[in-house]
Amino acid sequence: MAGEKRTCDVLVVGFGASGMSAAVRAAREGAHTILLERDDHPGGAAVAGMHRFICGLYANGEDIPGDTLNGGIAAEVCSSLKRLAPKNRIQRMGRVHVLPISTRDLVSAFRSLSEGEETLEVHYNTRAVSVRMEQNSIASITSQGPAGELCIAPKAVVDCSGDAVVIQMAGVGYQDSPPGRRQLAGYGFRVRGLKAPDDLLPLRVPYHLDRAVKEKGMPAYLRFTTYTPGDDPEEGYCRLNIPHLGENRDEKARDQALRVHRYLSTVLDSFENSEIAEMSPHVVDREGPRLRGEYTLTADDVLGAKRFPDGTVRNAWPIELWDGERGPSYRYLDPGQYHEIPLRCLKARDISNCWSAGRCISATREALASTRVIGT
Image 1 (cartoon, helix red, strand yellow):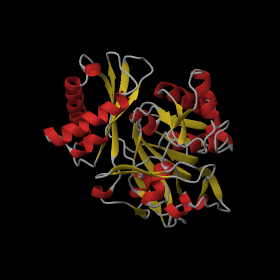
Image 2: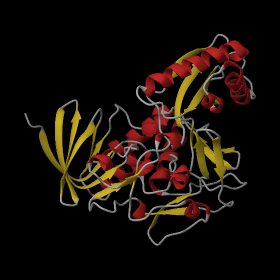
Image 3: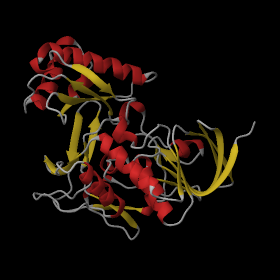
Image 4: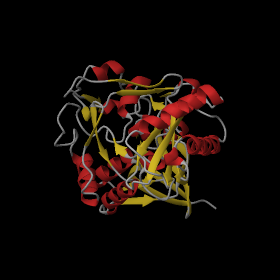
């Protein structure tokens, strides 16, 4: 039996930071907007990756910034987070500033913004499964969710899935790096029951894992594992930075997380009687298919602080490239500088009503390493 048929002005796929921003803004402009999210909650990569900070909100420099680099919804989200956690303060991390968060608060902030819009309807646990084209336009997208099949005919589509789900199904031109050249992906786990963790634990964790790689034959990428303290003194977060592991990679990442925790429990007193309380539901990519848009942002645009007549977003985050062999490297903009992302990076070159936002915009691999962060 054929599913329900619907029409809308704007269809957004993916309820992460970019999808929330696109959908809420469209609804505020009076557009009837439908938002599809594969999980049962908003937050996208921030929640799945168990992120502890929002990066890309502020200009870099010596002084603690007073305002976000971008106003609008970005500033609204930060205001909401500060109300939910007034003790959280902007932190300096190396040469940049970040905002500490809990993913629970981020989910709450996103829900609050989306539920306040009358012309926005959100469908959770719902995936876009097929696209029907007419000439050079997306005529309809079929989704599958708890209520069954839904066929949506939108005037415009914004792919905020991170994985370029719509872009690929629609046959839109896109760029992609081979699996061996993609940036390392992330997989996190939360540890509780830590004993007297100190400020040196973020250094001790990668130090011991580097030794394990050399002495125990553990996979080389495990030396790039990071540790971040939790809100509770007895909890912390480890993030594995892993290559593309092929089929069943979520299971493989989970096995490596268990292996890392077991090893740390034998070499660090703080981990001795700890346990894993939570794991990422799946591996979170830093890089994937990217739209072939009307303009492709480059590393020179980023580092040269380039401005555009159709600039839509300011970004000052460094080119943070997680290489599979060398680990992370950083190339910074000059202090106080920022570049812009032009609207043409969000618009498909070959399809009249297809757009993107977030991780699958039109950018080179190096430029994406700057623009992909949550704040931007």
